[in-house]
Image 1 (cartoon, rainbow, N blue to C red):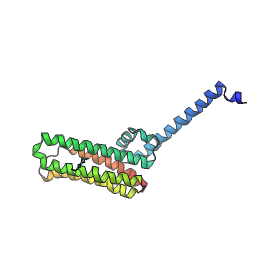
Image 2: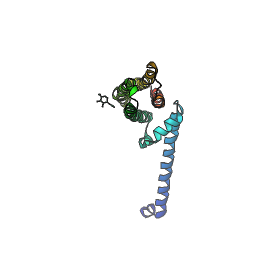
Image 3: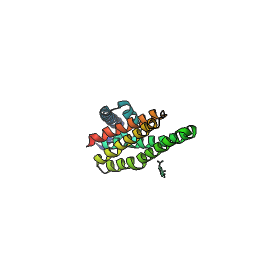
Image 4: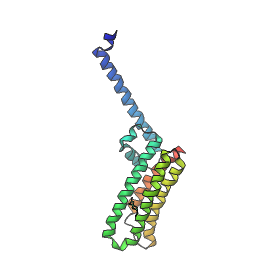
Length: 176
Ligand SMILES: *[C@@H]1O[C@H](CO)[C@@H](O)[C@H](O)[C@H]1NC(C)=O
């Protein structure tokens, strides 16, 4: 009996079964991710962002929300660097750009950490507040150019941030 169990055919069969299990669980993950992303305002952005992180493979909804919040953080840091570059090429916009640096800095140092802590501690309501503030901050940056009578060179950047934050927010709302 013991001999039979370890015959090459049995091993091939077991490997086959294992492959099937792995294959179907990977499909289940992707099905789950797709169904979550369908309930956010930007399906493509959601899917692209989530699948770019290998942790999405076995993440639950909280884990997926944390992945998007992390992407918000990366985008915020990139935006602050982008503003630094603009300050060199557009000294005429310095007042507004300094303000935008401040609001993005608040997003990255206050709002995002609040969302991460809240989500990690199973407190999605505060997580939503944090990520909602990120949207408010990027809108504040955008509208301040107009208040100074200047055309915004950051419209796309601010909109991208808002779109990503709205994906995170939609996921967090599903946890409430
Ligand atoms: C935000 O501002 C503080 C104080 O000026 C600075 O130490 C910090 O590095 C800034 N954070 C980011 C993400 O730029």
